[in-house]
Length: 90
Image (cartoon, rainbow, N blue to C red; front, top):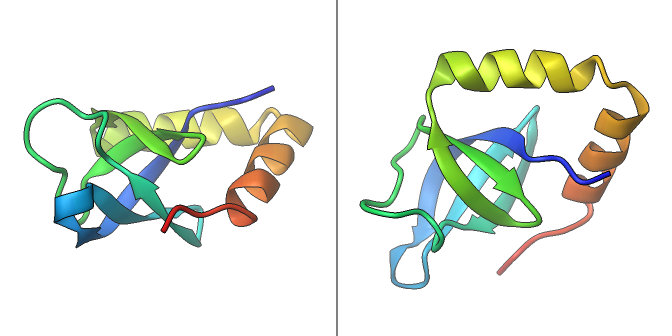
């Protein structure tokens, strides 16, 4: 199962190449924000991350509710976090 997981933008690491560092439950990785329409997200903004790409901006309330729901999935959450922890762009 592949999930979109909420992540908090830590910093835009390479604006020219649309790369940002995101924190997902304490794990930080570089992801692409190229697929987002409009302005690049800024630090402390939340995005929905799937396979190394930010798919959408979301607000903090939605992010925290989604994280809580995903954590209830148990094994699916653990598998997704293991995959996130082992991959990075850039």
